[in-house]
Image 1 (cartoon, helix red, strand yellow):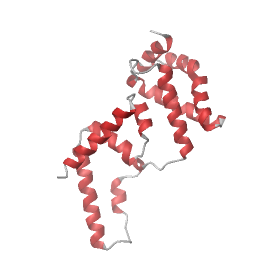
Image 2 (cartoon, one colour):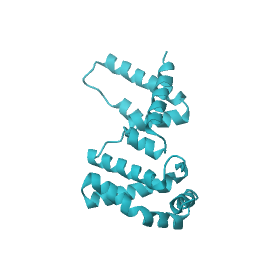
Image 3 (cartoon, one colour):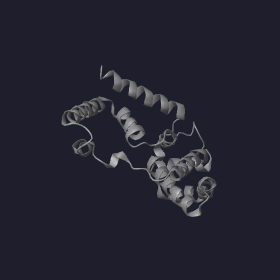
Image 4 (cartoon, helix red, strand yellow):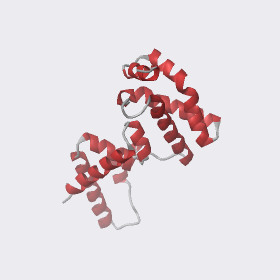
Length: 178
C-alpha cells in the first residue's frame, strides 16, 4: 500500500496526524488543479480548504479500488473550482419547504394556490416514503441543485452510476404517484 493510501486509511479513522501529512503531500496538486480552472490564487486556496473539509468528513467513502487518493482529491478540487466559477448558488435546503408553501402567491387565484399547495404537500409526503438514500440523493441533486459531478466525487462513485441512481429514485417517486 503506498503512502497516500495508508494516510487515507488513517484519515478515515480520524487520525489528525495522517490528515496533516496527507494535506502536506497533496496541497500543491489541489491548488494547481483549482488554479488551472479559476486563474485566481485566493479562489484556489478557498477551493483547497473546501476540498480538505470533504476529505476529512468523507474519507470513509474513499474506495482505493476505484481511484488513487490523488485522483480522488483532484476530482473533488476540480468540481469545487467549477462550482465556484458558476458563482454562488442559493441552496434550497436552507429554506424550509413549509415556509415556501406558506408564502402567498398573488399571481394565482386562491383556488389555484390551494391546489398547488396540496400537490406540493402530496409530493413531499411521497418523497418521505422513499428510502433514506434515495431521498438524500434527490434532495442534493434536485432541491439543492448540486451538480452530478460533485455528488459523484463526494460519494466516490462513477458519474454514470450516480445518474442511474437519481433516475431510479425519480422512477420510484413517480410510481408512488400512480
